[in-house]
Length: 480
Image (cartoon, rainbow, N blue to C red):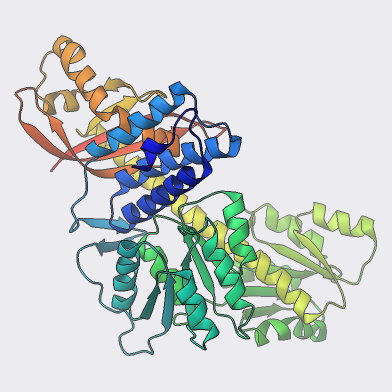
């Protein structure tokens, strides 16, 4: 085992790099097969190894003892059933049942998968083929290179970053291959690494997206459908406000030619009503208008919570720095000087509109999480078993429902016997959740006071402070 070839005083690059590669593969495989508990622990172990490698000093004896303890505790992590149904971004996904193709009668785009982990590659191939894609798997970077240099093509490439030969071998071969291709396909890198150097290497290699493992199937399907153009993304919605009809049409034309949905308005005083009915991703405002200036309109819009984060770009021939600063100070996000080239206008609009949609998506997810939090709190008040842990992973509080579930009627017996035993059982899993800052969901087996095993569905949710450090966790237990 690689962990037995490294340690305090034995921190050599070869075994350490191989250990990193194995942990990367474990993180990805755990996500692919729905083993979130195992994947979370593997990621935690990987973070420790990469941190020690950056310092080049290796771990201390105490640090290594903690790491090997976490490694040993992985043996007791409960594994989810391969038939377990999970909720992924609002889509029910059965890990043991092939998904029916959503677009059965359409052209099947082709996807190349560059992945040296055979199990992960096989699962990706099964998922994508069941979703209506033709998939070819390359386990070696050399085979991928030879195929593409020999004329092979695909509509999309999914590539792992980490290979046994080198940590960034996936990115390197993609750079080499795409340099020879006139119309290069979109490239999505999948990796357990979530650090800036890895992401930078991916985007320098021409990545269209970078996804960290484990990747949820629903998110993967959404992304490949969009990038392969089988399901194009919804066109950006842009509203142009200019009281000069000729100038307004000149501004709108390149946006319309690029496939965007454009609403032109010549009456500035109707901006608020039109925004509410049209719902744009971005607003283009002329600075100088008779009824009201662009900065005045922007200041009014910023008073409305609904439009507080709407990107507003000003259009003007005004070159005065003072005027531009005043306009930005009243609520604008950028200032575009006329005449502006179509390519520059499109770049500015796309960048701002993309970020606006991303913010709305994250906001919707936050609202959904807030709703789920409120629902869980409501459930707690109606009898869900609950425990709280501190920053060290030790249980500090449990409610009566949990004590009753495990057969403890006496508070004293619970404090002396039940709580220490339960805290010890959950400790490593809670520490892992606190370390990675992610929620764990799955089945676990708890011990009743009379000795019988109780299978429960559990959720461990860490909470962070203002600096992002996890300082407590809640454990919710629901009997099957």
